[in-house]
Image (cartoon, rainbow, N blue to C red; front, side, top):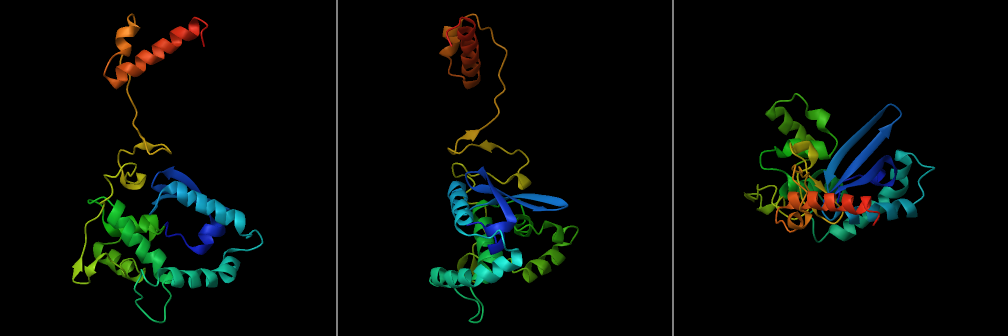
Length: 239
């Protein structure tokens, strides 16, 4: 649901709610802190609940990242094989499907659902995978070569290799779904109830007739009238 690796989920990363379909991933080192927003393939609230359950269930305080992978990764790989064998075709009989879930399959779905049409899939993937600096200053050809080495496009969405669906951002008109801030020049804010919260500029109005203003069909006028009415009640000692 997030494309995060085993050690990121269990210890390395702090995960916080951002929007109904995205989370913030915070990775701290003694000298630095990196924060990025990534899309989720299900409701972010469910991802947060799952993340909290894992952290509360599995004891990792005594392990570093290498110890986490040594202790838990074999089991994770086994479960991936069991759960995805009927959903994900294997590109090699010698490699586990786990090797493709994070660097290719999650990304292919994320681009198809959430990447704006004007954003290059390579740039979108590099950011959500935390590999943005690798592509900085590179030409388009150099980016494509790196993307192949990083397995970005090992899996693609389509009927077959000759009929790939290159459409992207197909869920950006879905309620509660917005472009992640990195690629959104005018980010909007969404609360936990999937309601779009836009800043409202309140006008200067004559509040002498609050009854008439409270019956207004204009949201900004109505909101200011409610504020004025609340202030009046407060001053009268009724609140």
